[in-house]
Image (cartoon, rainbow, N blue to C red; front, side):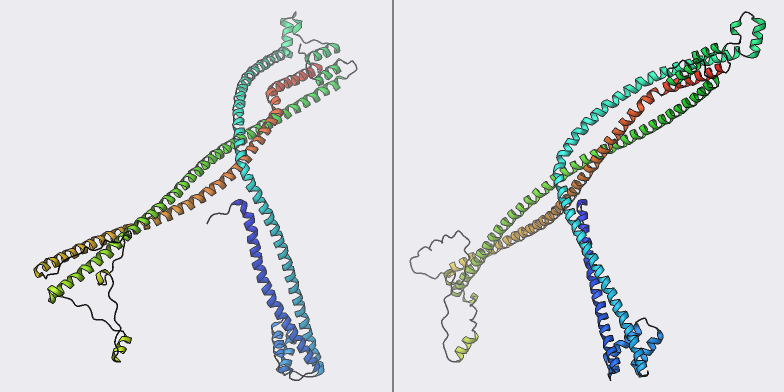
Length: 594
């Protein structure tokens, strides 16, 4: 069983849902009809019983209505006491007082009201089910209409898909070429950037090592023990000694340390230069600036990690999508090739069936002609054998009476026997027809030209007994030749017929197999064409997904490239500012970094 195409499934499902709902509605309607009929019959019987009991009609207990009421009292859910009273009353064993009758009629009225309420509930349920069914059918019919319109729209779109596929292929080729060029440019750019990055890292590393060496040297030379030693050994080297400096010199040294392009550091420098600014506030500003620079560096670290992570993820997604597009295009190409192959195979099989039908027709015509030739030969030779046998028998009657075979006696009909018994005379029989009045006929199988008349003879016939034997022998030889020819023709006819029947059987089997193969291949071709449409839609979706991913990558590059490119520079510069701020703080706190 061939699968239902996806675009037709909503239509088929809606029709199946309507059919299922209709069957269920029919079943529910039948059940309601039976239930309502039972309720109405029981309510009618209960009403008659109440009327009869209240009027005191005699003979009520012997009616069929009393039996119905008794059965209802047993089947319905009522109290045991009420059931016993009704059964006793209907059985004739209860009292017949008016008070008792009133109680009985009260119970029956309650039972009737219960049945009427049940009937009303069943009717309400039936009406609700009918309304739901009508709503369902209306909704499904709308869905069918929408699905039909959608199918028509999709069929219209299928006609345009070929042009769209061709256009998208050209766009894909252009995009792939552009992507290859972009990848080459990216590789060259990454190579150049990696070289410059290495050079910059080496430069920053050397500068950091130099600053560290200077800081260590200053720390060593400014040590208290080193100062005492220098005072004893190098009294003239006052440049290496930490001496007391003025507030103005201290500010100048701090400003000299804070050389930066950051406006916020410049504000601190301006604050240091101010004469009325407390050093405590300046030191706090330095501490706040150090914290702020650390926070900015943390933000850069987080953003760098996010950018690298998102770029890797987006590039991985792009690669996966490109691989999926490549696989889909390969599968589409393979499926198209398979469809083309199936189309050629179907055409070949159809042409083969036409050729086979032509061969069967030709074989049938040939077989018919051969059979007609055989039938003509059979009729002619049989007639010739009979004629020669008749002639031989006639010669034997004259020359060899002992070998003569008399013709069979005439078989009289019942009417002819009655005519003879009554003393009548039979009507003369018609002379035998056929060849020479022998009654032997020959089916004319020639072209309709009459045979030439027999030659005329002259002279009186003279009996020649000796020559007759030779003529009879020659007739026997002729009959033998004709019978042999008939036997050979029969064998040839049977062989030809057998070959013809075998050929027809083989042709029928081959035609059946080829027809089945055509049906199977057409089904496979239809499935492949449906798969082509599905794969085309999936490929379009993948292309859109790839383009969206490219947009994401481009946006990430716009947002992240500057940071990734200048991250180390910014980090080093920021670290330099932090170091300068710490040194300025140390200077303001009394340390000497001159």
